[in-house]
Image (cartoon, rainbow, N blue to C red):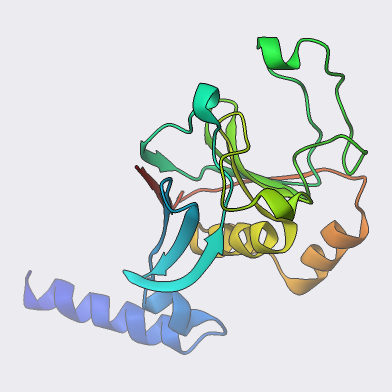
Length: 187
């Protein structure tokens, strides 16, 4: 790095630090999420340090949650549910946001086609396999995770927006994540 480019970078960092919220932008922080299938646990890591642990339900024996690395690319608040193609859902009917029988809970976070991290009111099943491949959290924990994904993924929304989303339970809000955080799923 030349002295000129180093000085330019320092000037940008100093300029950003002087702006509201600039200190956070000058010091880029990294969010990563890790799910341990055998333990039924989701870990939130910021800059490599575990900052939260949540119990989760993962895929049952016939519908295992796939291991691997993924990106958390989209957040949908107050999601509808459309039954996927599959024998287990062949008689199921689509459900609107917060409609009884909608398994998506308050929020879903995309990580693969038709696979999500999502909220659930069925907290008694957390910690054991119970899903058809998705990762389930309590609604409260899923909403916390969704806010982190948005904030660290470059799609931060203010408190008024979040309050509106929580108040308008029947309205769906979709947020694309420009810098999707990493999701690691391990056995």
